[in-house]
Amino acid sequence: MRIGIARDEAFGFYYIDDLEALRAAGAELVPFDTLRDAALPAVDGLFIGGGFPEELAARLAANRAIRSELRERIEAGLPVYAECGGLMYLARSIRWHGERHDMVGAIPADVVMHDRAVGRGYVRLEETDAFPWPGGPLATVRGHEFHHSGLENAAPGLRYAYRVVRGHGIDGSRDGIVHRNVLASYAHLRSVGGNRWPATLRPVRPRRRGRPPRAPHPHRVLLMITVTPAAAHQILIAAEQAGMEEPLLRIAARYDDDTDELEIGMGFDDRREQDEEIRSEGVILLVSPPSRASLEGTVLDYVETAPEEFRFVFGRAPRHED
Image (cartoon, rainbow, N blue to C red; front, side, top):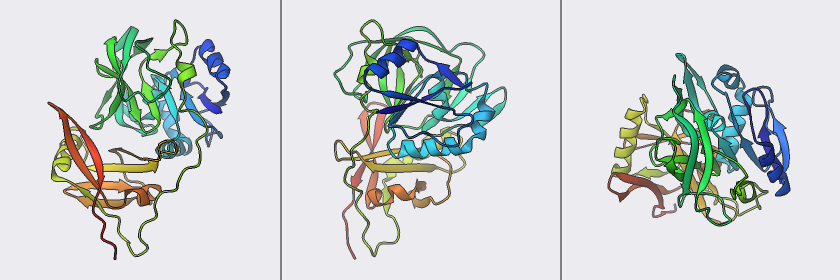
């Protein structure tokens, strides 16, 4: 398996023993440059470590080609592990000293820099059910953090891989955003003291060719996705809190080759060329062509899982063929 490693002026914080542990686990490490490369290398997954993307945000934003490809590859299922600066790069934007620069946009949240450290020191984490790597649970995950940034306008329903026992993480209680095959956290892990994370990085591997998505009915022209009033209510509230002029919600879907199940991701986003727009209950859904067939006839609903906690779920609407 080939793992791409971001190595340039923006990203360079890696422990040598971690990289050696990845090689020992069978990975070939392939460096790439987020500032200069026009395309990603041919890899099975990516590791984007720490660094100072805020200082080079304008140059990172200027490389639209690699940002666009990375976002598309992530939506198509590319496994990515990102720490601190890598998390910032995968977000929608970075704001610092009154300037805002667009980033990859794979993680539906914005980064804002603060004058004082938000998180600093050793961290102790516990894995949640959303933790994406197989290989058995780690009772406690230890690492460290040092960041002056925080996240704003995070999309509702984000999943988190860790509960924070010690430290700050993303919001003082959670860290490790899980989005499709991405795990992005403020915590820096290290392959010492029983923390075997390089050996458990199992999502980063060549994926088997699975069943292609179901083709739509040949006579069906418009994509039909229904948003229930309860789900629309929550989406519109979140869009207003995020300061969006329009409630633009991107929906992406693909089949998981290992489980043969449909995986769906969503988050606030901007319009892109070739998007199909579906309006339902005041919400504007954005769907790119690769996701179209898989999403045909679905219903987006809202489910309360606990007091003041909820998640969005997709179901299949009754189909009426022509």
